[in-house]
Length: 233
Figure: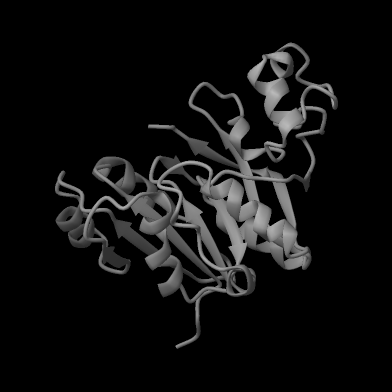
């Protein structure tokens, strides 16, 4: 059997309802010429997730982790199992639109130097999730963010380096770091730089991965033509 074009890896930890909605939205995708596999990794949920998800979705791959081992370690078994030429880390509290997956594959296919990419993540209030459009937290960027200077001057290249608000978010462009909520990466990149660093239990593992991708010479892109709901629950 031919390998899928994309493997979507979803980490579940006591988010049964959110995960079920996430998978349903994925299943409704218009993939066109592309193919997709869905992998759910479960961090020993106690809300009935395992049986409910396996019963409702017969065509997914379900991986049972032994305990709540965190985001990086929880996702890595799914990444290792994935057969797609692209791997998408997708939070359980997201909802993709019907053409999100196919459009992102189109973009990556047409940008061979892009090692990873993300969509525009939109919060329930309609605003953009700033975590999907970041610079690296270098000392100056971190300082201006922590001191509130970025909030005062969000479009300044000097004071707004962490979330790069000086860039035009209406067009696709390169960024330093993207969110693990929707992190699409080439399998060949992972084969070169390795898995998520399991030293991070939760948070910062996406920044670390992005940094290693950039260090290996690949680009990371923000693609605003694709909008994905991020409930942040």
